[in-house]
Image (cartoon, rainbow, N blue to C red; front, side, top):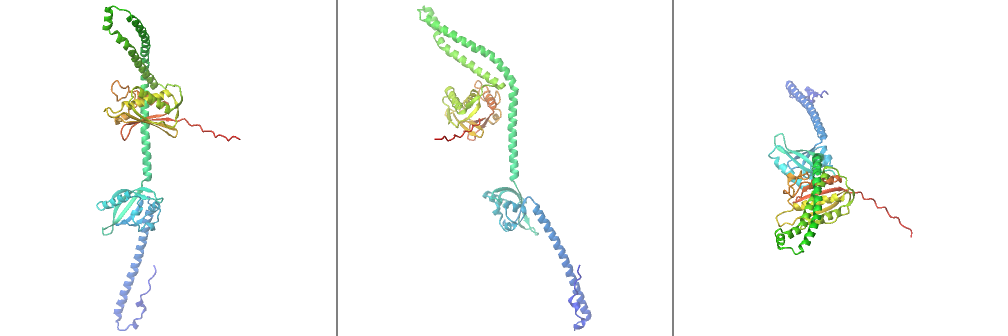
Length: 460
């Protein structure tokens, strides 16, 4: 440390100062030396304090620069007093440009402004408030940030502003969204796996039942056809007998036994028996298809034609008052079995009619739409019924599950349809519509359309 220069009074000879006692003058000089020494000591201490303060400031600056979270220190009016590099990089502005500007200039929308004002109001009575607002980033886009707002006080304990520390939520939200999508995909795969396990476990049982039913049904069908021929012969014989002049006792017996109405009803009874046996045969065929992968003829199938044929047959058969709204879509060709796809669509249309309101006033309606998307086609069947109960949505394609009354459904139609669609490489799903009613969506892979070769120009 440098030696301080002598005091100015020490440089003046005592003989030149008149009227002052020498002892008094020595006391003055001594006091001056003490004051001067104190000043030098204070200056040295001040320099040391300044060095410590500079080190503290450098330490705080390094912390602020290393923070990945954004930092804003503002006064009571929301004017920025200090910030850090993370915020500057986020909003694309320098510290000098941010310092002195209001926090409101950084907000991206009116909703964020309202949240900011509400947070500032709550900090008057709380130690800290967490709020999510949108900041405008360097590209001018809204970026969600989770801010922790705490009041800032001076040395006297008086509130002088706020400290805002936040972290952008974009990456976190994207990660959460991807996680949720993966979770939903896993749940769907689990449901499909569970359904496949159910189908496999029931396959052997259904195959045995179908085999056992097939033999008696064959007997019924064969016998009914024979009875039809016998009935025709008996009708011809009795018609010839009744043309004769029969005795009155025979005529009375004819009336008593109601021979004429019996002969009239016999053909319809035979037809009804045949129809019932044929439906049972169809069910057995469905059971076989359900239990085993039956390879039937695969051809090119145009879906618009199959939909129109299914509508025609259902309306002509059991649902003549069914309002079906359908407009032919773009040509969609798939590879599959036309009969099986027709069975699926007729089943979906018939189910929509069966689920129609029964109040006697609402007309059953079904909206069928066809749309192409990429390498697949989607057929949507949306009805105006009561929809599917939430507890039934996960079981709607289970074998033998039905919500219809006894005698009106076997619970196999949707299961068989589901299996057919899977064999065609597609997917069948069910959901409830927000406006009411249920919607079944049939998705099938499209055949690639071959490119059209350009036609060359012929010479004239």
